[in-house]
Image 1 (cartoon, rainbow, N blue to C red):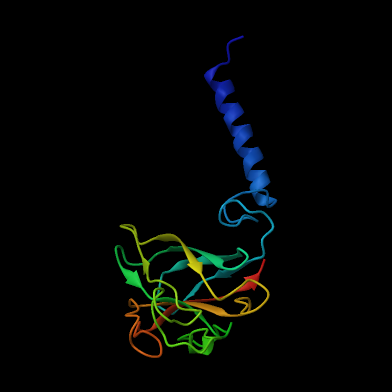
Image 2 (cartoon, one colour):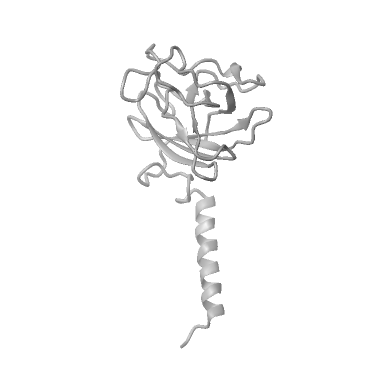
Length: 188
């Protein structure tokens, strides 16, 4: 029996609908119930970002507990193309101030100096984010010293995007400039 092109298209549409339904129910869709490496049911949290006045950034950051470390997955849109931005977990989950200073300083439960990933650093210090040619970011970052639930929990804290790259030297925050987006990390 020969299947027509229309039949093939209809079959592909049904397969796509089934996959989309599985993803919406937390059965393996992007960012839905899956940790890094396909681990199901790991504790997760998400922070949708709110832009500061005059900014166009949108997106969210997912946090997946991996049993000893946390995988952060940032998907951001509407930034300057080929640019670099400072990016941190902040101590307070409060984005109410227009300049997001209500989020406090970097999350630092270990009382460490500010720094890069290869030196002593705040638990909330993350690598700078670099946008692609369209002004978007889709990156996964491994965080040590924090969790989703448990000791040094990121849930209830803020995630902040800064206007400039972090220099990883200046104390206490890396001289990364104004806060241009903020999100509160909430359990999923």
